[in-house]
Length: 223
Image (cartoon, one colour):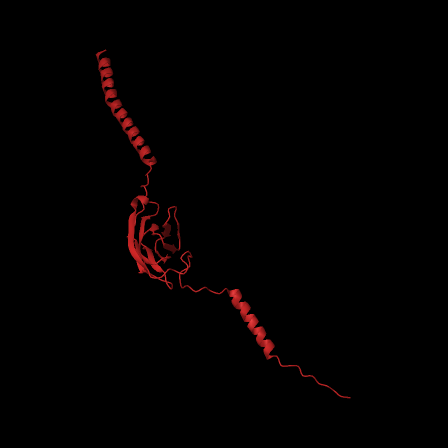
């Protein structure tokens, strides 16, 4: 009987020492599997796209070319825009011109604003490109006048990253412009349409053929 009890106690001790190790191993395996499953299904979120910026600062210049106005010439302002090829963003420019009474300005891409005496224009220059806009200034009365140029430029659609441009320049009108309400530059020659040129050449050639045609000789035979 004592031997039987001793055997039972030994069996209990052996079982208690084996099962905790098995249980711990099972828990360890479950934890590692759980970690592996989470690790295998993990996804990397791509980084957010950076705000559009200029790698190299663009060039936006307002430069007076001619500030004397008369019957043969207009005042001229040059708006030069250059977006270096190292940039990946488009250069956008918003330009406005305020003029006093008696002064009229015209330029490619400029339109009349709601307020009298103000014109505006918006321009876009892609990377690696440059653009030059010539602004003609005309006057309908003599005197000295001041014209104000203001504007902003920014990359792509990021208008919060704007930079200002400005220019104030005097113009002298020695003689009123011959046609101050025309957008055509003063002194610019009108080109004759090609149809008129071709028609004129045909008429000249026809007249030359008629003039050079020899007269008919009549032969009279007397019986």
